[in-house]
Length: 193
Image (cartoon, rainbow, N blue to C red; front, side):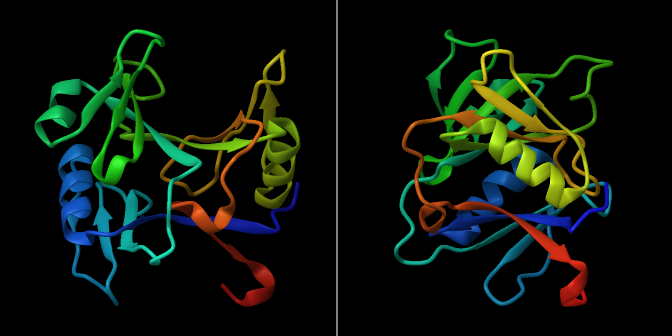
């Protein structure tokens, strides 16, 4: 399949850019690069390992998008100020990070897909996970899969991305894109990017 766009990087809106950047840099073992026009780039070991933190628009509210991360020890996130929201309902721990951002922390296991990677997935709430996954798979020129009960679907792999997959979780009333604080940035061939 020919890709209409390619994944460039992941951007996180924040009201307190320096504080949020310090949290994610420490949590993901990344270094902070020089600020560019009010945004801070966090860089990892590889060129594709990056996360941008930028000033949130004044109207930004909650977020229907969150990240899944690989964590050897949940205590590292707690030491940085995250709070446990739910530690028993799932095989992962749901945390509230800076500015109440949702973080799902998965235990790291040697030899698994999470070994060596910090950000695993970008998770987006949507009323129709399979349709959303099919659309993004077509745009990125990759494949998608859906759960047997259509409760979620995912695009995998995401070529050139810091994430392994984009997961679409079924939600009847997701927030609008204008309120989302975590965004993938893509480039298209016709725009010269």
